[in-house]
Amino acid sequence: MSKFIEYAMKVPEFVKGFRQERLSTIRPLSEFFDHQRISRPADLNEATQRITYNTRHFSGNYLIIIMLLAVYGLLTSPWFLLSVIFLVGGFTAINRFAPEPVQVGEHVITQKGLYTALFVIGIPMLWWSSPFLLIFWLIGSSAFVVLGHASFIEPPVSSEYSGVEQV
Image 1 (tube, rainbow, N blue to C red):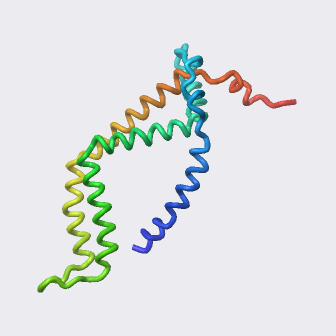
Image 2 (cartoon, rainbow, N blue to C red):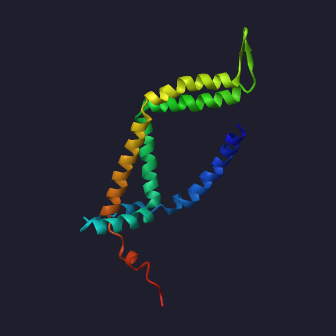
Image 3 (spheres, helix red, strand yellow):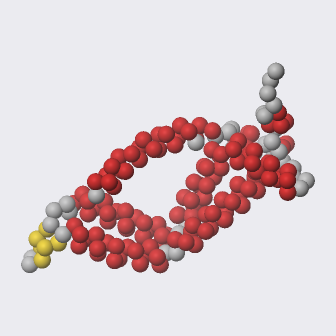
């Protein structure tokens, strides 16, 4: 349990570092949706070069798209959302309100018993909500959008000379 609390304390630090590293690379929408640079790649080699350049160049934008698709997937899958809320809320409630055993009538209810009941109800509920369907949908839709955008946007001319050294 102490390991969980230790990891939970590192979450704000991780989010702050994540925001500084990844989200600082967000390109303006005018550059991301520049219709002047849209063209069909001539062959697979050119498409691969475009994908390689654009996934690095627009990584922050692509990350936001993937996060938006994940939120959309969660909101359109109410059983999955309900089961996740049930498990997270139950875990939080047990930690907050039942750290010590409680005497109810002749029965003693322990934290271990509450966790067992939570998982006996929550895990089948989660399984029934088809989490793998959501995961594979997210992977497929993200790949389609990101690879589609990255292969059809031409890199700027300056990217051709980025590896050339100045003398």
